[in-house]
Length: 418
Image 1 (spheres, rainbow, N blue to C red):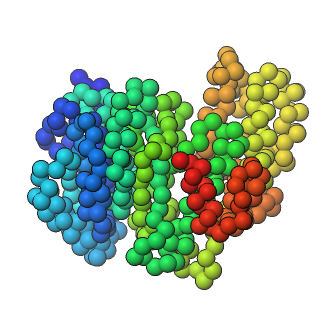
Image 2: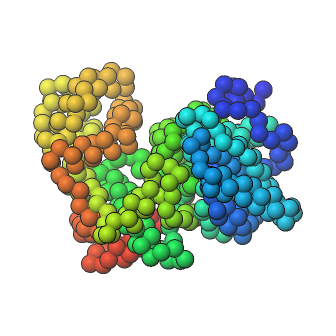
Image 3: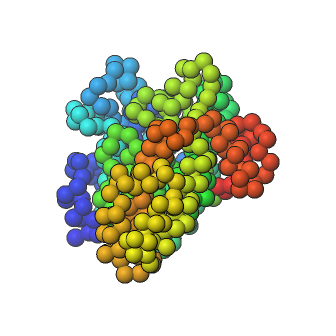
């Protein structure tokens, strides 16, 4: 019985996709869901340009489509399958073993990128289970990405060979120039600036588990994947939900020495995320992206700074601590049954470390997003242009001169993550 046999018997969507047994020294399996993807060959060729790590590498591509699919999308999928057949024939001696499965049109009403990613990741898990390699790395990538030449080596040495590490987010950068319309690059500059501004601002609050959550830039060890219950089935934000299950368990880190380069192209394959955001921004006459006001993160920082005071305080003193917070937090906590939740956290922890972990398991990334949206929808604050927010944060934290445009700000924020 393999390390993941119980999961594979109860939690997969389908039986095994491929009957063969992978090479015993397979250490990395990259999964790529593909729906209406015209550029997957570029992704495969990018992987071939990587330095070969000291283990076997596989790529699993799952060609799929939801029930509501257009004729042109079906044709694109058929083209993808034909291209994959040709690519595999032309690269039969490549160090990357490419497998693909045409899942066709799925009638499941819940079908979307979450289920597609889950099916492919479950298959990777099964292949590692067959060779009894619980440390095997399952990498999530998308079909419109390129990667840096050290991508596979870094995954091997920084994750696969480290017993203390279980999963990671991988550094990413969208291209800011190229063959797409200039409006697309202007839009992705603003959107990526928002993602990085949010990341740095959340670190500033003292929240302990701050990571980028991009589905095309994450990796997890096989046994860890199974213990976490597998990938979320959601049609969108499946990556965010899955990563939130991994982080508190420990061993999660930021692999910022390799780079994933996702395409900034417009896409309607998912209900929200980069593609739909870029589509909406490029349709508008004025290029703009509004984000959370920096004051909101100040309010959170004040709350998180007082977390450990709550551990030693009785309920009366705890109430006084909360009364000292910004009124938006007081209202938000009241709506989220704070007194009962604090009592529950205290009753189930016996040390400051366990209290802190349980507290942030409750006031987690989900609740932070809910609070920030609550804060900016109840007339406390209004969202502001991301350039202003990013510049204000740099000034507040004493970072380099922020009197630059969005592109200059993005370069500063990228450097802060490397």
